[in-house]
Image (cartoon, rainbow, N blue to C red; front, top):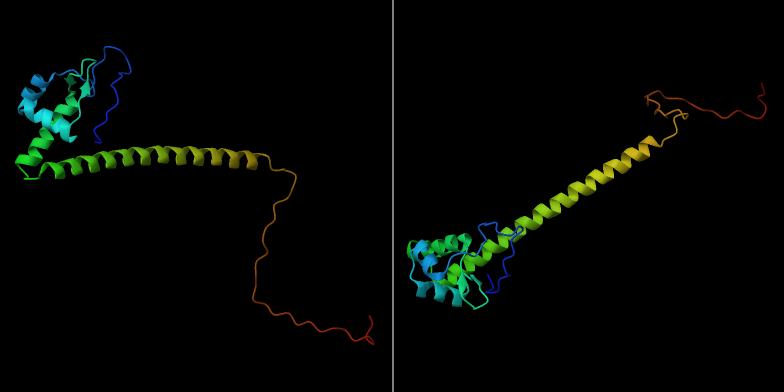
Length: 155
């Protein structure tokens, strides 16, 4: 993440999702098993950037809590430093964005292919039916000798 986050706007009011910023820092710390000061440090470093209230208070979502747990696991269990964890998170976000773009482009390609098939069917439907289709003559290996007639030979 680049530290900047868009303000959460639910599709429907009063509907909670994994992105809904509902947890204050003390609850988020308890749910993630980390100290509130650690959460503030992660926010300053850009590892986990929670939404902010109008009064600048942090509000964490369920996805943020999961990310905090992942940061803790990578740091403590895998021994990765915070700069490395930040890079891992950035790359995972980039991969997710690229997968979404690939899915979008696949949909566009499928739509274009469908439109092309419809146009092709329309062209085939417009063919004149009174024309006789051409069939290719079979090739043989017969040899034909041609000799020009001499002018003195007439029929």
